[in-house]
Length: 399
Image (cartoon, rainbow, N blue to C red; front, side, top):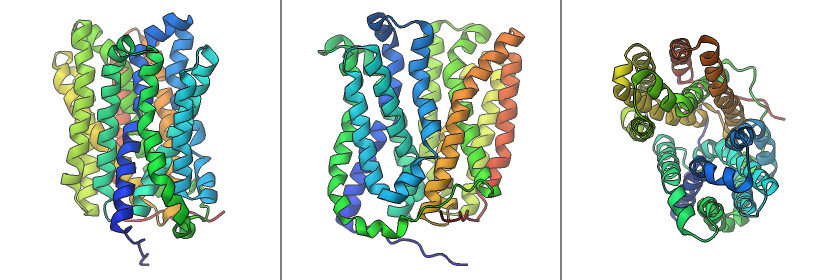
């Protein structure tokens, strides 16, 4: 049965929405990625032990997973525009709270930032689908690339900022919330025209019984697990198995992220607007991830090539995973429900994956078994890549 698509916004409204989308993308990773770089400064200043410091970095991922399933209900009541604007102001409040001296404000602010970004993570695929239904691949690629680039920049400049600005590491972290607040202020006037959203405000139940929804969720979860395991352990693996010094091992992390940006940029070109081409692009990006992990396992001396392949595959997969949420949903409420399901499971996998990977290393005393297990996850992703991109839609029931 043919389902009508929502109309594109007017030109003026579209420009405002696009400008806000760019700003939101700049704020969706940078308040988190900058923490790792200044973590030694934070620990020294506040007397945090290793466990507390680790909790500070994992707290946002747990907030993502815990909050994602709640977002559809909130969005159904308020509309996705208002919900996004409130989340962006919450992100600004959380960042400001981290500027307040003390351990409690730091952790509370970080938790609020995690919740705010979880809302944006869930709603952005639905936002793109509702506002720009004919521009899903290119706009998904755009905001993913911006997240990656600005998130990487935040990691790189956090320490120099902390050393040269008043307030030290606190100011170096709070500045990355500025794009979120600007986006909220920019979008605030659009809330007055919220009557246009009423058609999207019905609440859709989380589609737990849909095989297609589980395929989309599995694709989201597997690519998230692969990325966060490599992000967490790649430098250590490179030192232990490839004999690289810490500087060279750190360069591999940069290669992983730069290759990810390249993969994200290539996806819209390869997939176009064809469902068939998009399906093969998902399979191709997964094949690149498999090649990278297997090469890292069997040829430690080829770590650079392995990481480049894994980065290209991962960058393409994350765009396609987010785009599949937008494309597979039958309507706006279903897109929000499907996004909440996929991201809750995906970020739970992202939080658990690195811990399980490290546990396998501790049990076996080496990296062969953990890398082999990671390769199995990558191969299993082939099924979800194929199944999540079939030309069908998820239709969730209304609550």
